[in-house]
Image 1 (cartoon, rainbow, N blue to C red):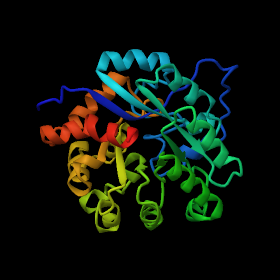
Image 2 (image 1 turned 120 degrees about the vertical axis):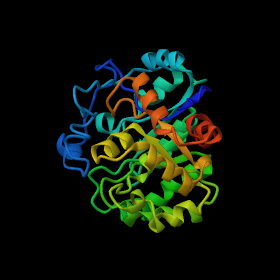
Image 3 (image 1 turned 135 degrees about the vertical axis):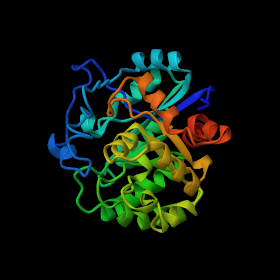
Amino acid sequence: MTKYDGPIYDAHAHLVSDDLERYPRTKPFKEGDAETSFFGPGTVGRPGGMHGPDPVNEKPTAEQMHDWMAEQNVVGMAAVQKGLIYGTDNSYIVDAADLYPGEMRAIIIVDPQAPETPQMIRDYAERGIIGIRFFGVGVKDRKAWLTNDAAMEAWTTADELGLIVDIEAPAHGSYELAPVIEAMADRLPKLRIALDHVFLPDVTQPHFGIDERFDGFAQRDNITYKFTSLNMDFIREKGIAPHEVLRRVVDFYGADKVMWGSDIGTSSGTYAEMIERAHEAAQLLTDEEKRHFFHDAGRRVMLG
């Protein structure tokens, strides 16, 4: 296996403060939310990870990530708000990214139904965020949550400001939500839409669940995909080789639209281990495809 040895861009990393007084961990979601998802307790477990045998669960501060990035030749990172710890209180993720603006840029979580959301987006855009994230854990009707009048204002505000819309993959119903995402991509053709964890197809199905149901995604250039440590964990638990799934993802969507994300702060393992696993998953990619996967696609999508 020839490893990619160039600079790396991490499109999906979570940061968590160790200052509990200044940045309280509000835990807005029930502890069982992740356990009752289709991952099962062996793969996701409690919010924040805790999966796999003898797991190491790092919840890094910005300072820790800065050091790890230097050690692993990671030159840039999308700092994604940790919803299961902070909800829509984005104070820490924005402050954290401000510490290292040349290498970290924040993606905040917003509630598309909250009246304060459009102004929140504008205020944080002035501080240099690169995107907003719709994190629908616990939302029963995600179609309405993402498409009613209140939600449309959040979408259009992000589009107006040139921000990414990052969408958390649903534990159930990714196929049903596909037409909603496609419609938004058509309505806002200049808007960059990033789907976390390749939108969690059912990898036990033929073609690893990446089939004609996602043709609409593949046909739209403004929809892109993060292949993360969470994907690799779930794939592993199903007895499937991650490198075979990544090969299918790249073939189906195109190498320039698939980017690596560590999912540090949620998925288990050290940062170095996550990068090593990414190299193993990329073993069937060509050198050019590896360059897109590890760096070019993420940097282009996240930074525009």
